[in-house]
Image (cartoon, rainbow, N blue to C red):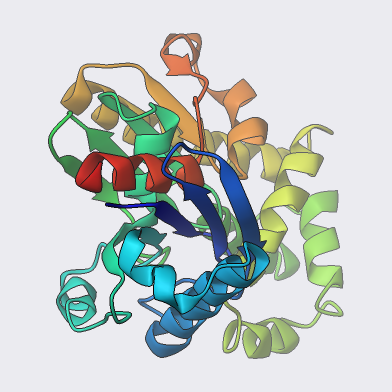
Length: 288
């Protein structure tokens, strides 16, 4: 009989883990490094193992209890078919487990296991629908191809626009000057930065854009309105496919919501839980 359930959320820059007993009592929580199995497959799974080990240490349990435990991990990148196939080879001896994408556990948690839809707009973005039996995912293919209304996508557009303004191709503004100043007003420094920048680095500039939009900066306003239009494109598609209201999650949610149309805001609902809640609930659904 299952005694313990482990939930892991690897959707952000760090893995978060939670261990509960079969009655749902919290035994331990901790966090580790990145859980992105697309960009950091080996190290992400190593972090998952470290988090599990730490959880059991904090709860004064031994590895002998793995046989009485189940794990559900929602990991970034676990929506990619080749990664899903590769994950079938991964295991921790005696520990029953299921690995899904972080957006699936987030959706399950947001609606407490009931049917519903979510749109995560953070560093990246992705939508999910749970119909009570299976998940349907939208987006989540990285900001170079997908991830509408994401922080990384907004940051990329901001830097591109700042460079255009710097060269006099479009009208300049204080926001664009500020962005260029972070590169010493040097296009070459910006170019060198892009060669090593990760999505979270691009997303750093999203806050700058929202801050300047509040000051009516013409370029920041243009970028925020474009981001809001992208968000509405995703939200409308999710509402149409799910025929339900939708919960927004992620770091862009608060700043982008005021820029959405009244029609869309009326369809938004507060999430009832997070991805860790979803992982624990999904474990209960799968194994009781």
